[in-house]
Every structure is written in structure tokens, then in C-alpha cells.
Length: 309
Image (cartoon, one colour):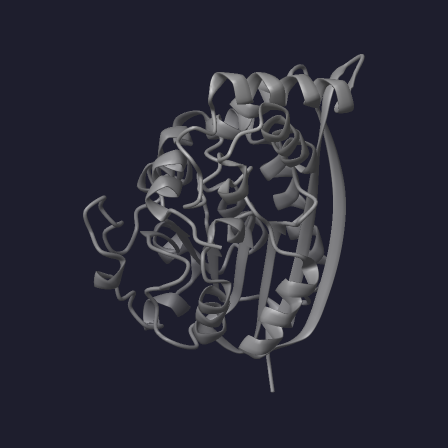
């Protein structure tokens, strides 16, 4: 799946200012992800260094800071404006400059573990949170530095999952854990079906090469990729989450406002043509409408792996 990263970056940057007010689903999945992690950690397993990939506005990072007050936390995101929101929310001073919009991710080489990382929490409270603008497929860290890598609803925006997961494996210490959530193939199935039907009704010649929405991987595909990258002790959970929206337009508006609009390179500029959109809305309402509005399905996949022998 080829993703237009510039479009992803632009979409999420544009949504940054209001993201927290409308990203209820993302917040709920983040809580589900943390609930899978926290109960299984003993006092001896507390991760000293944690990386949050796709940290967005920093809500998950805040939860991690509360759960692991003595840990060093790193938040990474492709969208600079998201990191600006996180910076304001976290209200911490980074120990090295946060990335600027013009900085290449490759120019950042975070410092290796130092004596400061082992200092008492009271002396380093303002230096334990770090924010970087970078790509999940090119993590700007040295190998074997993190005890835990976590990511919430980010990997659906990645083009090369093998490369991205391989980068996580590289930066994890031996025995380190990787937990992430992503959307599965059943996500927005109603919207995909409605767009396909709309093209059939209109008889558009564009249909064959058209992307009707973001494509998602199956849990089997994700499991195979993690195993190929070297992860072991794989665990998987899947959830089907049904959401209700007043209208089809309100669903589309939320997807756009949260930055989650289709960013595949096959997306046609004519996808939002008035006739196609009208036919899509009509079919969606006919097939998936009810007295409270319309339904939309999200298939959420939670996965866990370890960097082991």
C-alpha cells in the first residue's frame, strides 16, 4: 500500500488544534492499549525508556508519564503541528531541541543513555519527556535503547510495514516489548461498500483504478510481518467497534477533521465528485441507516510482541 506521506502530514497538522475534541475513538483505543500493558508489569519490569510512535497531541504520552513517573519518555510524530500541541500539553522542557518543520528526521540522533537518565526523578522531572518530528519508517535512534515501544492507531498510515516494524525491533533492547493498535480490514466497510455501489450506479470508468478509502491489513498479515521481523511471544486481540453518526456527511467530516481522510496515492481527485458523493450517501443511508442516523464499523487490532531469541 503506497501512502502519500506529505498528505498524511498535512492532514494531521491541519487537524491538530481541534484533534482532542473530536478524537473520542482514538482516545478509547489508547485506553484499551494501555489496559493490555499495565496489569502485566511488575515492579521489576518497569520500562526505563519508552517510545510512543505517532504520539499526536500527547494524550497517550501523558498517560504513560502518570503510569511510569520514573521513566524517560519519547514521543515521535510525522506532523509538526501535532507535536506543538503535545508540547503545550505536556508543559515540559526537552533536553534537546524539538524538530522544526524544515528539519530532516535523519539529522536527529538522540543522546544515548547517560548519567542524567539515572538521576532522581526530582532532578530530572522536566527532562524526561522528549518530542521529535520523524517518520516511523526511519526512527532516528540508536539500536537497542528502548525497553518499550508503543503506538496507537498509527500504522495504518505507513507504506512499508516490514521496514517500520524492523525499525522498532532495531531500537528495542533484548526482551523489550512492542505494543500497538491499528485498524483492520473491516474498518469503514460500510463506506467502502457505498462508494463501490456509487461507481456502479454512475457507471464511472474510473472505478477499476479507484481507491474507495484507506486499505487496511488483516491480523494474519500483521502477525506474519512481526514474526518475519524477529518478534516473538506474539499476542493478538481484535475488537469490532460500532459507531453511530447523524448523517453520512458527519462521518466524512469527522474523518477529514481528525486527519484520517484517504491518503493512498491511488486516490483520484474526482473521488468527491458531486454525483458520486450523492449516490454514495443515498446507498449508505439505504443500507446502513436507522432511526438514530447511520452506522460505521471500526475493526481494531491490538498486538504485542517481544524482541527475544
